[in-house]
Image 1 (cartoon, rainbow, N blue to C red):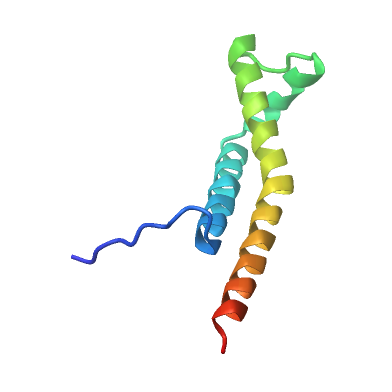
Image 2 (image 1 turned 120 degrees about the vertical axis):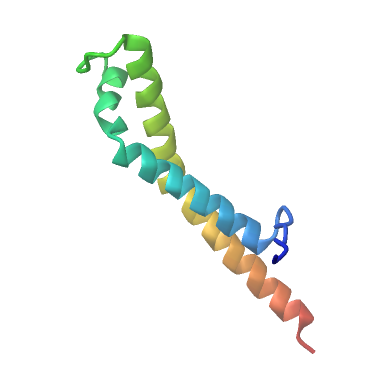
Length: 92
């Protein structure tokens, strides 16, 4: 059995894993149709579910969308910069 290597926090791999998790969470919410529930955020209830469920799904989708658009690219850029600086520091 192969042992799994833990990903230390604040390393390039950790930043990439976090960006991937944010993107996967958004993808799953989008796949399951949570986008339809964002109408509750504008004050219109377009769903047949209770307003609390619709509001929570709408907020979760909006949060995941903004995290995917704003946070994930920053994490990927930070991972690249950190990896380049680490490689430069190790070079003779």
